[in-house]
Image (cartoon, rainbow, N blue to C red):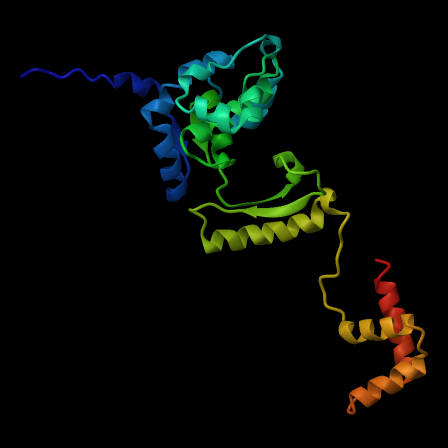
Amino acid sequence: MKIRKNDKAYLQDFKIDIRTNNDVYYQELAFLFDKPAFIDLLPDLRRTYFVPNLFSVNDFDEEFDSHLFDTHFQEAVEVNLAKYSKIGELEESFPNFYELISIKNDIPIMLDAECNFICFEFNRPTYFVEAIEQAIFCGAVDDKHFKPTEAKVVNFGEMGAWETFERVAIFVSPTSTYEEVKEEFRKAKELMKTDKRLSYYRPRVDVTPNTRKYREWYWERIKGKTYQQIADEYVKKYENELTTDLDVLKAVKTYSNLLTR
């Protein structure tokens, strides 16, 4: 019996260790990182970004940041764009991004751009970027940075739109569940209370009683009516309401104070 040669045996050397207890996350990560086309990228990516030795995924944040500012990153390197099948589509459809990925010397920008392009190449959303970085530098991934559903502070200017004040957004994916979105909503509410970037906006989340009525009286006062006139007209309009000029005065004062917050 003739033994068939296993021409995919080399892939074992680059198998990515996936560490998550979430079955949905595990499947999403496995279906990307086990693609032979993805695995074939790893040797070139590790040469380009100076990864002679993998570091622990447990220390990814600290070691990754340190590596980005290593002396190696002062050297001029160039991304090998020929290894991508969709590079022509990128150049045509996203010329600014194509220019960004072609930059030399700014390695952190190039790395981020290339990982984003890998998402484009394999039809994956950009929440895969950090996981791809872990795969390159660690040979393993966890779900610390893999967030298909996530509440985060964003400035949409950083996404290519006009510059704005920061807002909290909840990002969802096709795998997001209702329970996950509810959990991220709770996190979003906490961010609104604690993140200093959002301190410019502090609305009253408790509804002030009688806001509609107070506003109506406020604008009647702006028109020049006396407090007594406003009270009389309101009583005539709503026969069951007992309203005095003093009630209107206090209400207008309260509403004016609320407008100063």
